[in-house]
Image (cartoon, rainbow, N blue to C red; front, side):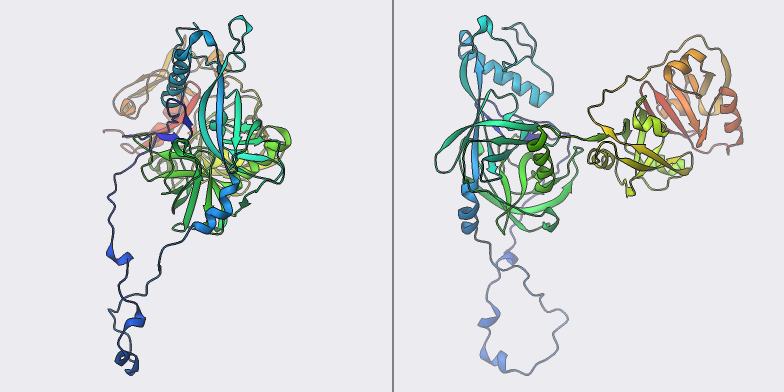
Length: 525
């Protein structure tokens, strides 16, 4: 059963939720008396002190490594004034009355939780919320209504504030409230949805800024503290420990996982270590209920500061891209193609005219290194590429048909328009050969099909039954290689199969529409 990852800002009516697929096991919490040792060593009888020294018994108790619990009072006094509460408003047409606000909140709920817009029957425009870019009837500005509440912290004494991008997304006005009860209207300097980081600016001086810590020094098990505005309750302090580092949820950044109580409204607030330094931004919770269930995710502050620096200097984040669509490499595929270990990023498609295309990357390649850095999991590649300055010449190590190959690619900017891949047609070719043992009947691609698909070879699956069907192949697929050998025609396909050991599993690289993927066909199964 998948569990939603909930974005932790609080709207005025319905909590904003952000769904990410995850799996959570229920864990019982057991309070052990060993956490609270009884008598100290100083309370032993005097005779025991005067006794002659003797070797420790083999079964003697290990020394207590953790004594007492931390006191967070000094941290709160030090960091508390740097934490702010953020409220956002939205202008709605007055003619709709209270129903407009409820509709807007419901549309936001559908968008964040289900990932689809809810039809707006009242205005007649499906799924379009009332934003500054949405004209009001008769040119009216509309009434300003509360929209949501979040948290943030002061980056610099001259009024720069950091928070989550989803806290300010879609807001007409943003207000920052300090602990001394002052309120300022804020300007959104920039917001980056991919990392969920936003920078605000308020007109104030000599503000108490936070101290920024080093994520590399964070250790699993160390105490951390959060300050924020859960459910609108300003300056709420919660504490816990770091549960894991570099938690991968498939997003561009890897999170710090903690068991600090974080709830809707904590979004954008700081995660603070015992030295009073900010090490993360509280962003999401893994939850079945929409409330805190013991797993909180924070954006590492080093990643957030890199984004913030770009937002402050240019208002946007510049990222690199090479133009490939990728997928994970499974254990079965790694063994079948001779890679051995399930690592790297499988190239499913290469966009025409992109750096990867010009560098000679092909669908079916396994990218194992980028600029010398090993790609352990598929998400590692886009992170490394995105962090590379556009225009940089970089090296790719790819595993192709049983051998490694080095390629040079010039990284482009992510905003480069994407070209559309050809989808292929299944027409006028005549059957030329078959591979009955695999349950396949394949035919050559026509010249028009090759031109449209931008393929120089490959064969079209005319029919897939038995082992091939069980491996997931179907009519219309294009087989690009078999047993790590590139195929140019149905005749070549038959020739390669004839040399293989009968009854042995064979890997095939299959293109379907815009994507390429490996499949392992097991004859006789």
